[in-house]
Length: 318
Image 1 (cartoon, rainbow, N blue to C red):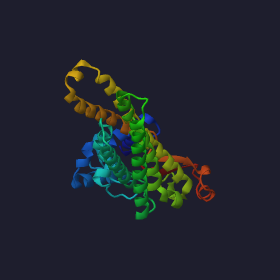
Image 2 (image 1 turned 135 degrees about the horizontal axis):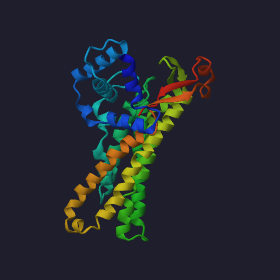
Image 3 (image 1 turned 120 degrees about the horizontal axis):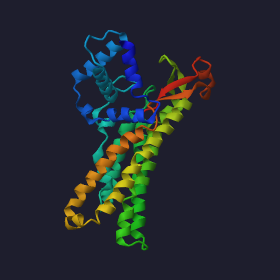
Image 4 (image 1 turned 90 degrees about the vertical axis):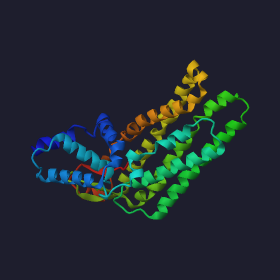
């Protein structure tokens, strides 16, 4: 019946728990959703619409409903109802950028290039997955892009130069520390990226919804919460990527097998980075639910007075 299936879709992966969100986002970032055809997408949307209206064809299983929801949530923006451009979906998060940032023996040129590529992609991901209840001027996109790229490149290059000029570290120690340099660069740049790419939300506010999905008003306080939560996920995302691979590689490089086959170093390093990235992405974006809740009493007085609901929801964005 419709009630049992509604319970299945909403309770099987409760978004109020970290494990529920983790399982949900593992589905959302499934790379297979990048290759869903237009006809398949329309079929999934129609199936979910029929489900909401209580007009499901006979023989439809819970698994089919779940797969339809997975496809729609991975591709369709929850605010606009439009498709997110494939490279900028969470399922299209560019792994190659992270691998490039961690490649050993980077030159100044390669550091600048990979930081630029990483932040260029992040800017587009932030824009594509933002709260889109209010229009964002093109000028805000350009500001975010320039600010994020400038901060990442400046910090990474500056720290690299300091380490190269330092005389108290031997070459091996300098190389080991240099592999950790991208983290403060990317973490600080990610904060700037989110703040600048979505700064318009702070001034215009974002829509907050009641329990029935109706828009109660536009809140700048909710926008601030959304940006802080998103920024925290962007700081958490690169942490395991930049901490674990250097530790793992420092151990692996001492193994006789690796010493005897130095050509294996780069492919092994890349595989380690890919494995850690595959774990860190769903963990980071699962820290907070995409549809976050906030007490109406914590919002602007005019919004709190406009509804009887004690708790309102808003799209935090990803």
